[in-house]
Each structure stands twice: as C-alpha cells, then as structure tokens.
Image 1 (cartoon, helix red, strand yellow):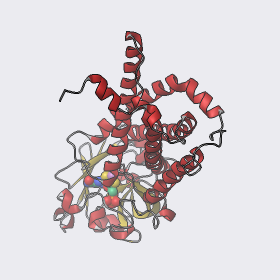
Image 2 (image 1 turned 45 degrees about the horizontal axis):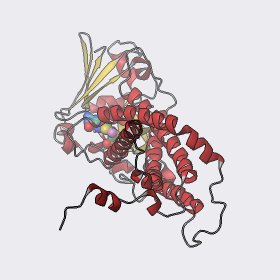
Image 3 (image 1 turned 180 degrees about the vertical axis):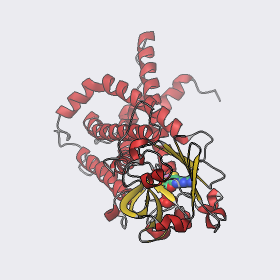
Length: 389
Ligand SMILES: Nc1nc2c(c(=O)[nH]1)N[C@H]1C(S)=C(S)[C@@H](COP(=O)(O)O)O[C@H]1N2
Ligand SMILES: [Mo]
C-alpha cells in the first residue's frame, strides 16, 4: 500500500461545482447580505450608543430625554442582533462552496487569495464572537474571564472594520447581483429543488421568527409569544430582577429597622428614616428599567424627587451626586447622577413600585430611578447620597 500523494488528497476535496443547489449564487448572497448589513449597522450604532450612555465622557452631557431613548435603542440592538443570526447562517450556506475554490497559479494569485481569505476569516471570527457573546449576555451566562462590555465593544470595531473592507472589495459583485433578477431565467433545472426565491423568503421568515420569539423582552405586546425571551414576566411586582438582595449581600441590612438615608454635602449631613422620607411630598412617574442584558420594562415608581433631597442639605438642584448602596460585594453598588439628571423632576429616590412598597429584590428600602438611564445605574438599596463627590 502506498501513502496518498498530495494530488490524491486534493482529488478528494470537493470542488465548488460539486455543490449543485441552484439556489446558491451571488443574486441570493447579495440580497441576504444586504439585509445582514442593515442588521449589523443598526446593531453597531445602537451598541455604540449604549457604550456612550454607559461611560459618558466628561465633556458630553446626555439629556434625560427622550425618556425611553435608552430602552428603545437597546431593544433595537437585541432585535437587530437576533435577526442577524439566521441571515448569517443562510449567507454562509450560500457562499460555502467558494471555500473550495482552488487558487490560481503563481505567487501573486496565491497572495491575493490568502489576503482575501484572511480578511473573511477576521470578519467571520469577529461576527461569530459578537453574536455568540451577545446571546450569552442576554441569557445572563458569563462563561469567560474578560469584561463582557469592553470586549464586546472592542471586537465590534474589528467586525465593522472587516465588514466595510468586505463590502468595499465585493461592491462590483454586489452591484451586478442586486441588479439581476433573483431567479434563474432558465427553467431546465430540477423543479423539485428549492429556488433562490424560496431560500430568500425562508431566510427572512426565520429572521422574523427569531425576532418575534425574543423581542417580548422589550415589546410588551410580544411578551406572551416570545418563548425565547429570557426574563418574561417573572420577578416580584411584575418586574424582572437582575441581582437579588441575597446575591448582593443586602438581604439582612436592607430590612434593618435602624436603616437611615445619609445625605452628605460638604460638611453638612442629614439623616432620614424611611418614615421621614415617606412623610415628604411624593411624586409618581412611569419610567423604564432598561437592562444592558437586553430586557426592559416600564413600571410605575413613587418616591421623593432627588432635587428635594438636595434642597434639604442646601445643595443646588443640578448638583452632581453619587448614590451609594448597602451592597458589599460585586459591581454596580453605586452610581453617579449628573446635574441635568439630578434636577429632572422625575429623578427620584423610589420607595414604592406599581403601587406597593418596594420589594426587597427591587431595592427596598429605597432605590434610584431616573429617566433614560441604563438599568445598571438604577441603584438599589441606597443608604447614602453624596453631593459633589
Ligand atoms: N445596588 C445595586 N443596584 C442595582 C444592581 C446591582 O447589582 N446592585 N443591578 C442593576 C441592574 S444591572 C439593573 S438592570 C437594575 C434592575 O432592577 P430590578 O432588579 O429592580 O429590575 O438594577 C440595577 N441596580
Ligand atoms: Mo442590568
């Protein structure tokens, strides 16, 4: 028996012509690709918007209006990312045989081929990473050591860069393919095989279905049909919970009858019990919790406007403040409220939710609620408000 030669092996590797589905072709790829490109663009822009709201540079002041802006941009982020998954699979299927194209002879052809493949590998690697890490984040599973947010952001730039290069390189092919009718002109092909139009429709249908099955995380009237949405109706008081009091180590301290809110401005300190807070004028507003993990929900909050508390320590309504909580471990135990948000009449230290005393898992005895604010900054179990810190 002799060992197989390189030529033997090469003969066994399929060739593009071996894949005979007539549905494949640039007319299909370009159309699915256009839809995918739109999804990626929306996902990229809404993602970058989240990073901007999450870590706003000092020179930029973001408005608390529109109230639902963060909620809707992040809903769009989840929807466009989810819609992209079936489209990506169909697009990869449609170009898969091209993997087996043999490069032309000569060093130049090899180099060009290698460059194109490396750029496509970078695009695919980055795209897979974005969709997979995003999906795991929605599920709330972090099987990695790195910071999700920083890595998801960094790889997004790689993905969008590789995508722009890819579109630039393929533009002539894309133009021709989009200009041509999607279906073959000739009718002598196997009539039982799926046509391009049916594959295209299936791709869009799968994408639409994926959206309907997950968008209930953001869109109230889809909640019942969204079987895949991770946090449907659960959580006390008709609102999902991300970190429970037990998880944050506040289960005991939050219920301590000796709890007091400390207001600190320079050398002035005012301390208030929960009853004293309840005796102050209360205001009620309908405001969303919009979690960076993809779900959001509107709720009715009642509490003391933050600017009224600032007045108690003689601070200006538009002071920058830091709110701190009883939380002893893990992230998000405190957050910063910038002046234009602090002075907004709807920004409050909430004491009640949907008409009842705040549940401990929603931040009892008191939590911050402000309009158009990422969920991570709606700090629960607050016990200290520092002005100008
Ligand atoms: N102290 C504290 N506050 C917190 C958190 C936390 O981990 N610790 N999680 C935040 C996150 S990520 C979100 S989305 C909201 C969710 O509020 P809910 O659990 O009441 O729905 O609370 C925020 N407030
Ligand atoms: Mo969150």
